[in-house]
Length: 192
Image (cartoon, rainbow, N blue to C red; front, top):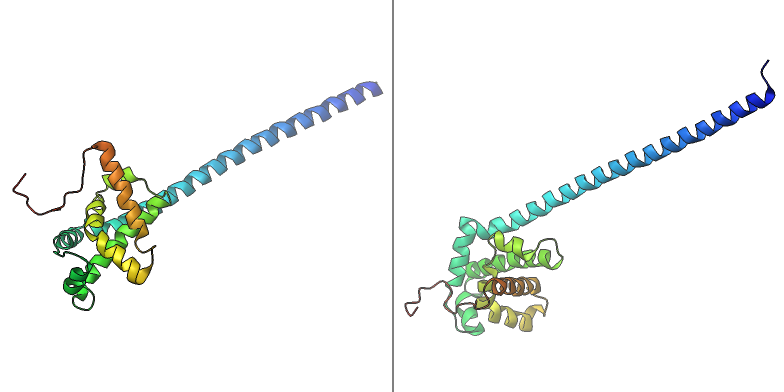
């Protein structure tokens, strides 16, 4: 005959085993859930990275494509002495096409600068992708932009392009402390 105390001991052991099995099951479930969350987070990060790269490429295509480079060199070769001279030759009342080109270039650089300021991209990445022309563009058009700020648009006009140009200039100088933006830009200088 089975003793009542033996049955009671067996039921305690089975109960304890049930608690152990439940604990092991719970721990395994936690690990599986954690792994799934890590995989989902990784997938979300990859999606965000893909979108970020797509945005950079979309903006950048306008800058470093053949058409973008033609626009850049054309803009860099505009000849003006000050804001009044710029407006007379290339302003929206006399030369809509020239103004549209400058504004398109400014907006593209400004958008990349916004991404840089928000830390969606870093300066080395923008340099490696070929967007270093912002330094030259900013230096050439700085007087025009500053006067446009003063007269029409306020101090935030092209602020992210200015930030981008400043960070790119710092990056240039970190690689070559003697770097300075040439005043002749892309025109041949026979004195050198």
